[in-house]
Amino acid sequence: MRSQFLRALLALIAAAFCGFVHAAPGALLRAVPMTGAPMGASASRILYTSLGERGEPIVVSGIVVVPEGPVPPGGRPMVAWAHPTTGIVPACAPSLALQVFRRIPGLPEMLAHGWVVVATDYPGLGTAGPHPYLVGGSEARSVLDSLRAARALPNAHAGSRFAVWGHSQGGQAALFTGLMARQYAPELTLEGVAAAAPATDLLALLDDDFDSIGGRNLSAMTLWSWSRVYGLPIDKLVLPQAMPAVDALANECIESAFDIVRRMVSGRSLAHTFLSVGNFSKLEPWRSMLALNSPGPLPRVVPLFIAQGEADGLVRPDVTRVYAARQCAAGGSVRLLMLPGVNHGFAGRDGAAPAVAWMADRFAGRPAPSDCGGALRQGA
Image (cartoon, rainbow, N blue to C red; front, top):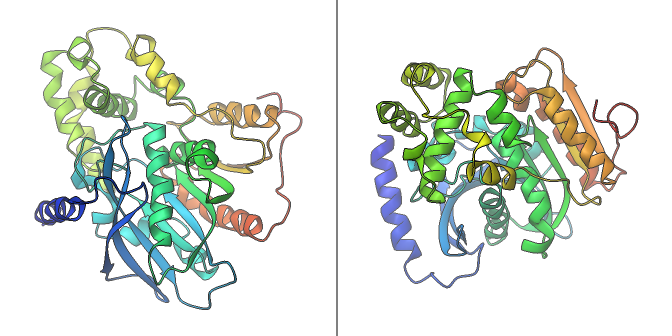
């Protein structure tokens, strides 16, 4: 069923894109009403334009959820949701998931505040692939262009003010959005960046986790994606007998606990046979690309909220603390919320309520709280 819908969607995308090759990034190509939206809201699946890795025009999909109620002066604020890893092939788009609205942590609360919630799929998910997995600039452009497209929806009445909220891969996307917003989309006003267990240091992420099942999953998806996006030589790293497992992982989506178990089975053989060399994060040109896609500190005027699980075995808490300390050293304001006993998968869920409250204060113009002092300033 999902594959049939995807084929129809890709055909629709091709038709919608015809004649729009020269459209500006963020042009709304199509909006289709969705069923099952949260009570008191309406939703649309959208197609819009963005830019690819070589500056070429591409089409990206996503959803826009619009609350009912009066429209404030200047239009409704927007929150861009940046999703965690769901896969790297077109069928893995969150907008195609059966429970798409439940996959946006804090959605009911954000709608209750009267915010328009915009959720991109990222390039190559829901549209022609491959998906540039963990490529920060690609993610940020798709986030910012989704906001532009949402403003063109007649019923959205969206203003220019926005915040971005993301988890894991989406945390990386949120940070890159914060880095690129002023230059890429100067007509939009960024009020703050909120991230849960963000991927801030890809070198550390893949190096630390390489000997774990989850780490090998990440490595396999990154190698498969980047070999196609950047033309990097995967055959010089991955042993021939390991390629079937890598291909299997690349084509499996992550939507439920069942999917995670299935991926553990698919990738089991990689514990014994995977790379022809040591951890590829130490080798060029991969090392430079990992560094390029690790976000630096945000502009000091952009407040930052981070929720981090203390029991996270994938994105280590100390790596997140180091990034927060770098932001402090750059003169920014950082609210770092540590979540006791919370692992990686639940950081978005458990961090949603405080993240929404933090964003509400930013939209209200209240001063951003900061934990920049003492141990955090020193990166401890």
